[in-house]
Image 1 (cartoon, helix red, strand yellow):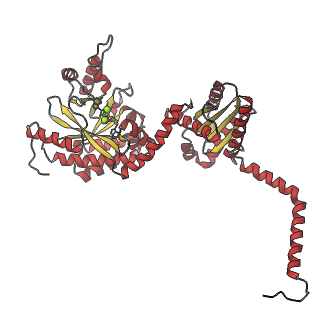
Image 2: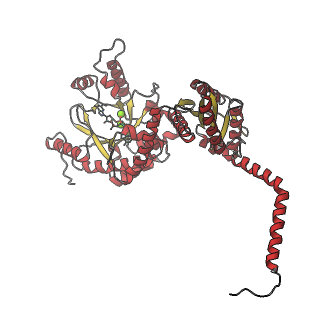
Image 3: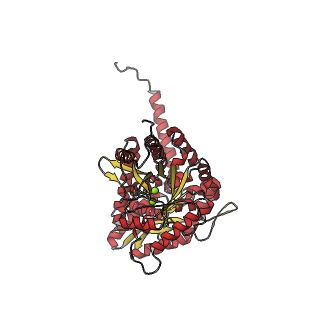
Length: 485
Ligand code: C2E
Ligand code: MG
Ligand code: MG
């Protein structure tokens, strides 16, 4: 379109120009305030709002500066990650406002135990970090770590309630443990997790092995999450025998066959599954799978077979685990008296009185309860009378030491005493890890009731166990059943 020839002023354009000048004038006058506001916003974005301490952004900034300085002046830099142990439970007990109060107290205590040039930062969720920008020697970082742990000696307060808290600390040092901020933080974090794994309330220094371990752990955890969906888990069955050689039943043992890693031993993946709670679905699957399998095998013989299934600490702690067992029994049709649940001494001893009620309920319906790895946990044996236990599984360590000459009290004495004690309490004793004829003869002499071990049979996949069972029926070691599969 052609331009209008009229010389009338462009009023709209004029108004726009006035507005532009006005705005820039106002901005000009207000510049001081704006700068102040900006500074305030920057400060807030680098501060933890609850404790007023620097947050992660500020911490990383200072860590980067410290790394640069250390390279110029040839000193070291220490990084500590402190995480409150079981802080989630504090929040559950005293509510979020109580938890906030606790965090503020912890922040003040930690602040008073670091030096002025050091940076204490708060990450939220019960985690703090400390930067030691001018470290003379590695040991000084450990000394600071110990001082930080000491601040938890006195109880903290949430309202009127006193709380005893602990913390786990991971330490690493630049340059040897990492050249940049993110590596140093992740290494200090791995060390902190190691401190937690070892029970908490302690500090750990980063090592390269720790790095390999933590990488491996992460990968393994990822694979384990997929293992269930991909049907990589399988149950194996290790035969258990009476002393006269008859098959008594089997212990169901989990196997994980990963397509690339191969067989991952249960001693490696079960603790991991416990940490990330995957053991709950895995344990439930294992129980149902084993019950279904044993119900089918039971149909091959009229001799009652026993199925032993391991129960993890987490399953035991979840209040309704007896309901889960009852469901597996009902669905499979397996007799409750054909199932023996194996718990370790430490699992049983860790629980408060009310938590053992599922154990009593299960015993009432006829399920058997065994103490696995007996002799490796606590020395107090009072629970044998207090709890509805039916079986003791003597740990392999006693069995392998049976024929070793010992100067003072020998394994033979211990095994004899345990068998006598168990029998006086009307408990059955099974020996685990029997590997030699000599051990078997000795156990027979000492009055043991049952045997399990490589001498008699390794854990077998289902088809191999079925073949063993059929051969036992064929040899009339077990009575044949007329019920067909
Ligand atoms: P456990 O319950 O004490 O199982 C016995 C372990 O000893 C098994 O190891 C078995 O293969 C091994 N063993 C048996 N006889 C002998 C022997 O004569 N010599 C030697 N050296 N070892 C023998 P496995 O299968 O590696 O299982 C290790 C542990 O993993 C089990 O110890 C149990 O605590 C846990 N586990 C296995 N399956 C399950 C499961 O389904 N659930 C839970 N929660 N834990 C399981
Ligand atoms: Mg066991
Ligand atoms: Mg055992």
